[in-house]
Length: 105
Image (cartoon, rainbow, N blue to C red; front, side, top):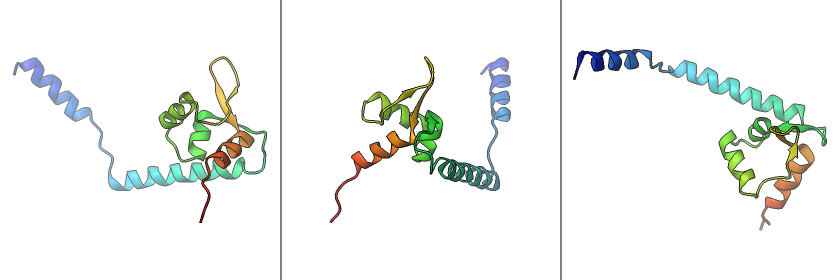
């Protein structure tokens, strides 16, 4: 290994930040509180348009997973907010979930 390669490897290993257990727990708790806040704020307004990120959080999905569902055509009806921004109304989200429900018993 050359001196330059050793320097680069040393920089990479020092620049990598690791998350401690208390930091991870704090981050996860913060994300959980944010999801709960979103659920409560949109619970009553059927015409509220959720951004893709908000819709994903509301349904406990990652943004990437939400995009895959929508691009596969098996997601809810999409509302285009602009040429590049899309969202989902609360009403369409609820209808989509009802269409995916399975019969009990």
